[in-house]
Image 1 (cartoon, one colour):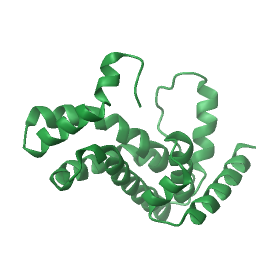
Image 2 (tube, one colour):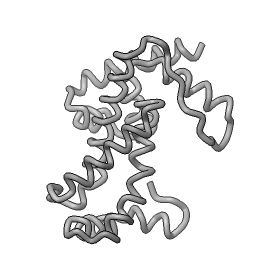
Image 3 (tube, helix red, strand yellow):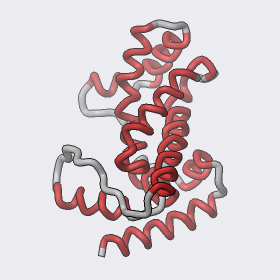
Length: 178
């Protein structure tokens, strides 16, 4: 999460985040604005691969929920885990709503991507073909780098369920890739 530049590293510093949370909880508009700037990309990175073209809406709803409930966060150091759980919940909700409304595979919105554009497009296409519960476990495990235990805790499911979903998700991803 830390970048190569000092400013980026400072943004993700737990002490800086804790001070911003405490300021935002007191109603400090500048702290809220800075916190929003930090969390928007983090939440978008979580919601996008799971909710696909509804990723921006899911991210917006997640950020609204974060700021509405920020005063309830007892431990400012737990901010990123707390935000991640809200973002995952919103992204899965949007993905399931989309799945109920349509059986046609969805496409990711065109986004600027650094690196191999064709590879990114192929990955996006394969991910779009997965069920929402498979997209979320792949994203949390392989994009966010969480352990199976952390994914299980975040999704409130047993570790065995995470493992079976990962197995099925990888198998479905390979099939979609071919």
